[in-house]
Image 1 (tube, rainbow, N blue to C red):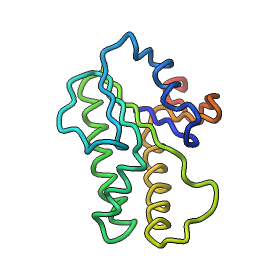
Image 2: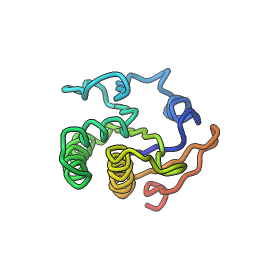
Image 3: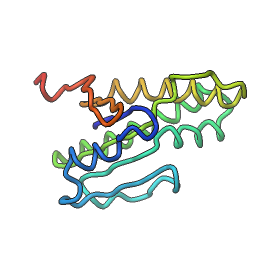
Length: 148
């Protein structure tokens, strides 16, 4: 699994498209900004964009950030298992960094921000590759494939 993060409108999507040559390869692109989670994945490359919005939906359904994180871990493990079922599969998660800047005054938004931070930590820990994109420039933070 690959995890791509960075600021809003900093080129994460474009970097993923170019880096994985998605214009030439069959893939499924799912945006949590516009839709609910997909039930079936029918391509070997699946991109899930806007995972911070998915975490928001979890936070809205749960009583606190811990419960949202617990559900995130369950869903993340299902996605990782899907990828590991076949060696040619690749899962790419894209999430916008929310940790920099002003802390929200609204208590729900603070809880959501906390949940996103924890979920991103869990995602980074589970990922083979973690890449941060700022102003279109990639910074590889973790690359287990190179370490092998």
